[in-house]
Structures are given as structure tokens and as C-alpha cells.
Length: 429
Image (cartoon, rainbow, N blue to C red; front, side, top):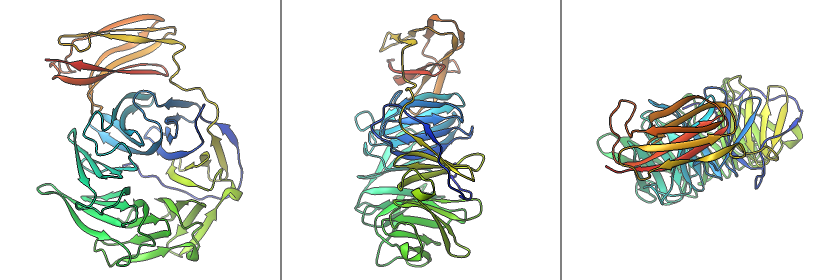
């Protein structure tokens, strides 16, 4: 998992810029920075990418949903992936330095996912994915959906947030504290204990966020402040308790992150608090210091150690000296088709081969590839420079090793420049 961290915020400066187009609002809920230094933002209108110069708006195109709530990184044998949670299910997107190469969307209608409303995602060291939902804990492992319903080894309340360390999942709930779940290779999952007021040192039983720091300590952001738990035993080890009485900028804590100096940053409903545990001292930042909005949903650190904040009114970037704020107002979506025509894929369903016809009005490199529903690339059907005009390709329904793919549903991705089209195909054996 790529850790999101901070450095120091100092002076005030606001530089307005344009970010997105035709959105329903300015709210950004998630920030993810990949290994190439590309910034990805989960917004009300879908997924946005910034490469340092250009903004690319994927919107809700190519199986990427709107109303994104979280973005989580996974390193797999088939390349890097983003798992994207939303109010419309989960998407997994493979990507490169050039952008998204393929995406698959999971909903209750097409899979065994527990819920279409996903609040948080974490990935463990075995690449098992966990999803916080109103109905309980969703699990995706070995291309199989599992779940733990609320009241069965987890508290009987909607799950809002997740944290993970080794084989332990910490599930924050809406009003019932935290449920600690242990993954056992033999016995599956066991609810080990609950952390709930009045028996533990939580400021509130509604847990907005869970963060595991570099020492393995658990930080919990709640509706009434934040606290740190240093051990697994439920009643002991609650060594830090922070509310507005101690200097926290606002009691409703939405995001937590540790920086390279060991300071802890809190994104709240009323701005940002930086906390130095060594001296128990706060430094607070509000709109008066340059933030575009008081509500801070997520925080990430760039490869150059500058900071990115997801807020209720766009994105804020801090370069170590000043803030630059980006509003959701006017960039054209990457999904425009004015220089392309939709391709044709036939027959579908298919038994022996699939023919693809694709046309473009521009010269450029084009890649056509087949993926399974987990996002694994099965075969590259076409890759190369193509002049403007019609491209024809055929997939023999074999994988990259030359073996026939089994019957099932596959995704065909056609990517040319900023254009991306995905189509579902069915293979019958």
C-alpha cells in the first residue's frame, strides 16, 4: 500500500486554476498518487488525473463510477491497479504512465459484492481486498466475493472506515465503535473484540477514519475527536486522546495521516490540524490560511513531498510555502468521441474468434487488449502506430500463452491517445 504523508505547511497564497468540467459540484473525496507521480482524484463526477501539466477527466466512462468515495492501490503480478469505491459499486482499473488501460465494475447486479455503497477500501499483504459498506465487511479474494454481515463477528452497525495491519482488520462503524477482525488461514475470519465507549478511550463510537502509523499504532478519527490505541488488547493502551479542548481545529475528524517527521495530520470538518506527539502541540490551518474549503476529506503526499488535499470545494496543493487551489469548473472530459467512432465487436457471444473494427480521425498509437473480470490482462490483440482511418483486428480467444481462454465474460479495451473504450464480450465453449 502506498502511504500518504505530509511535510510542513507555512505561508498563505492562493492560486486558482481550472480542474474539471461540467460537474454536479466541487466535492473531492479521495486523493491517490501513483508510482509515476500521477495524481488521481475521486470526485462526484468520476475519476480525474493530473500529470503535473494536463488534467484528464475520465468521468464515469470505461466502468469508472461517479460519486467516488475512496481509491486504494494494489500491486499485482499483472501490474498496478486502483480499486475505486463509490456509491455505485466498486471498479478495478489497471493503469500505466499514459493513463487507464482497462477497468471492470462490480455491482450487486453483476457480482457477489455485498453492497453498491462502498465507504472505504483496504488491501492486505496477501492482496486480499476489504470493503466497508452499510451491510458489513465485503471481501474479494481469488476472484471470489465473500462477506461478513453486521452483527456477525463485527458490530451491528454500518461500516464507515477500515484499517489493516498484518492479519488484523480494524472496522470503524456508525455508532458502535470499532470491530477487530482477525484473518486466519485455517478458520477464516474471527471477530476478536469490540472497541466501544465506555470501555475504551474513543471520543465517539462513530468512526470516520482509521489509520495505522509507522509504529503500528491505531489512530481513530471520530465525530468528537481522535485517539490513539497502541496495543491490540481492547481496554488498555489508549494513550492519546484529542478533542477541541486539546487544540484540535474541529471535533469531526475525517482523515488522518503521518508525515516523515512523525507528526500526525488531521483533516476535519473545520480545517487541518498538525499534531506533534513529542510535545503534544497543534498547528491549525483554515480557509484564512489559504484552504479553499473547511471540509477536508483526504490527504496525500506527492513524490516530491508536497501535499494534496481533497476538499468540499476542489483540490488544494501545498508546495511547502503556499497553497494552490483547483476548482471543478471547466476541462473537457477525456471521454469525448468527436475524433473517434465507436468500434464494432462481433460475433458476441463468440466461440472461435472475435473480430474488431475501430476507426479514428487522428494518427496515433493504439492498443487493443482483452482482460478478465478481475482486471488481469489476458492478451494484447493489437499494439502499434495506426494512421487515421479504420483498424481491423481479430482475437482468436487464446491467452498470451496461446491457450484457449475458458468460457466466461471478458472486457475488450481499445485505447488510442486520450480515447478509451471498453466493451464486454462473452465467450462460449
